[in-house]
Image (tube, rainbow, N blue to C red; front, side, top):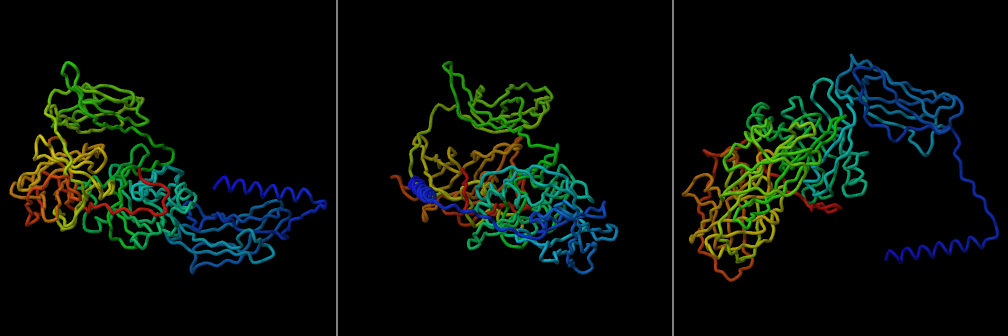
Length: 621
């Protein structure tokens, strides 16, 4: 079709050329001209003018196309009542100038901080105007507590994580608060003249809602506990209001919890994961920074995953000193020696790194400190690649990596837990069912103290429901696995007795936290040491396997609880094996107090359900 179109256009142009070439008469065309001074206001003028408390005037440019001669242009000035600024009613062009400046004066000592007056300027003489420019200009003007710091870098993950778009890094204007050190404002980071707007709004992927509160305020008064302050609208409209979405509204989780009765200091102590940092000119924000809804209320629908959200203040640049380890399997040489194979990936700015494999229960932070001060010997590397480390026994291990810059300063670390089995009796997995696995199934069996739903802490990063397969180990018939689970290459391995009671523990999700290591799942009754309770079971009536799943990390011989929910595998097609007689749990147990686990009770940790952006041109891979 494209070729046909091109060929058709070629024929049309050829025909036109033939007709024009055969004409014997000659024609001249003179374009129409516009007389007059052609005075106008530029369409790039801001609708908001922030006045500095350290000045007493601001200049507004007015343009003209006709440059010759001096010219006085009278203006009609209308302002809001008790306007705090003085606006002249005329402006003078010098001979040869295409721009004149209207000087607005004010006395900052008599003005109220944050109050804005509306001013409208209109060119009174219609003979001076032009159809190609604005003959009037309306703006809000006032004394602002913000002053421009400069141009910084903005790394957006909000739309990448929520809609499955590509993460972007681009320039934004950053302001600082003149009254309070450590307060910053990112000026309309999704609005006109940004790379985001050009990529997604101008192309029609997103609509634009024309909201006014589109800037993001960052409270970095304590650089170790940085958080978003207040609420804002990115300004976008995804066009799916009929599906419960539409115009996105984001607001601070920290501020929300303070409004519910928590104090800032108590949140720092009990929920440090809600805070980011300001270090070396880089603001890094955590996974749980903002709640979201699609109305004007302050009631959350859930949180948006903002892991990786960052701002580089003017004069600074992003650096990548990250590290990660992926365990690829066990290797045995001809002499019978066993090794753990894997791949280490280093960030682009890492000059060199050191790694070591620790045993289960070792103090990870002490080892990191020892690598840095030289008291712990570790293997050095300068680039990403495969590694092989000797293993003498089955069990859990932790790959610890410390990264350094060119000056030898430590810049980051990671700890990834993996499990190695040296058992020679391999499992013989055979498929028995295909079906549907669903995460986050209500009713909640794990709740906060107020009875609210906890849920899967990574639900915003995974597919909530998908088709998969259940296998049974023919060498150990009480052992099963579901694969794929959560992600390709991951398995949920569990045991089930003849009564249908299911148990599982320390199953690797494939997700890992830079500081805390691997994210695991386990059966609630096992983890909470409730031997009489049944939280995972097979329900024969519905042909469904129910998993009372707890998500947690394990570090320094202690468990850290992150969330929990019922999750189910519903059989869709049997492969010739009759299921066990089911044992249905009669009374779901509400786990609210535990002896071993670090419970976070005060903050709602349910990620909002993500929509499929119908007009999006990019999808999450």
